[in-house]
Amino acid sequence: MTVTAKTGQTKKNYRAMVRSRRARGRVGGTTIAQLRWLVDFAQDARSEAEVGRQLATLRAEISALAIGRGSMVGPDSAAEVISLRDDVRRLLTRWSDEGTVELRSSELGDFSRYILRSSKGSGSASYYQGRAKAAVLLRCADLIEAEGSRVARCQRIACGRLFVRVKRGAYCSRRCSQRVRSERFRTTHEAELRAARHDQYREKVRRDQGRPKLEIKPRPRRTAATIVDQK
Image (cartoon, rainbow, N blue to C red; front, side, top):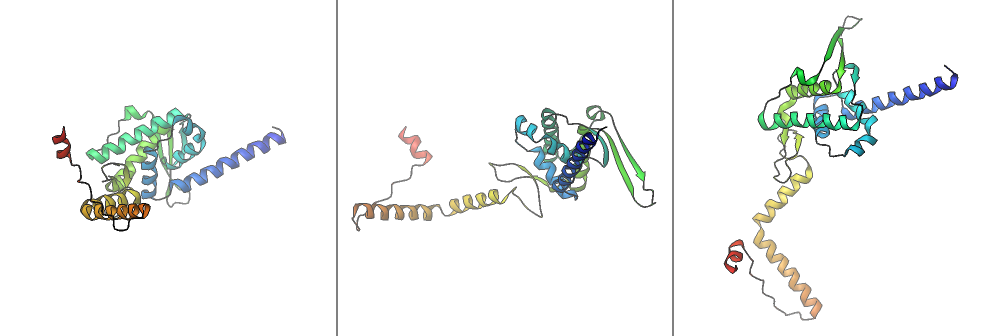
């Protein structure tokens, strides 16, 4: 091997090491952080082309999430990442809706997991060999077993997104929480809000027409019953 080839290989290994370190940071080292990453991954809406452009990054993150260290085959293409994403989403959705998780060895493919005692006599190291599908789904099952009670659906009807609940949180984001509060406020204070909007409209017409004493009566609100009667 020439010096140039060695230098190129060294740079490649360095980039892979940096990518792996950053991936571990994004996935997180705690159970809740990894479960949150997994839920976000399952609901990622990126297209196959977009996934393809981020394939190296996604592979590093999937590897960081997978059981232990060791040899993991794939995903080697954007299509495999999307297929894995669909499998994880089905698993999490079934857990959220039905409260059950089922993994069949025939569907996971061949894999091996080794736990070796440390040479220093304290602790152990875990090694996995097999395809990414088995590694990620098994890790998903581990996370559900540990913190599955936190997996919930957003209670905003128009959303329904899966999320990792903190304390008694009912919504997946501050945006959904704020929208629900705003809708509740509008429903509770509908008459006051309609009156305020009418006052603003009346003042605008008075200014535009130069008639400060102009009176404008509010139009009767069209309800569903009124529309049916008109027909």
